[in-house]
Length: 140
Image (cartoon, rainbow, N blue to C red):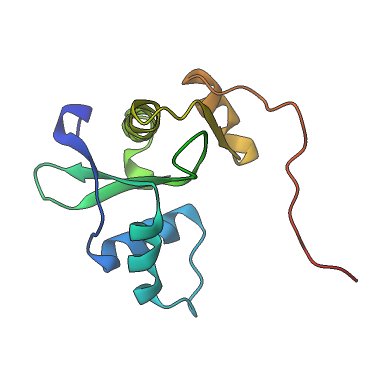
């Protein structure tokens, strides 16, 4: 498969079994998760991108942006089928999301990259954030 065989679409719904598979590829799916929770996740995203194999019509990659719709956005949940990595599909997903966000006037676009994916994101225009991401874990 070549990049010309891929089209990235912004969607508000998609067959949930294909989305579950992509979350598994990303390592983010747990067996106890309910696939029905993905429908509101997709609809609640500012943008949800699906990379579609034009030959089969199936999803081979995804990514999404969450945003206030005014100034800030975060890109997350970017995943591409392992056998198709390195072909430019992930870059096409990110470009589609960034273009959509910028079209809506959103200038601050962040993401948290897995350590091994940092070179990928740097190559397409992301730089190390000055600051420290923090995660709320509750009070003790």
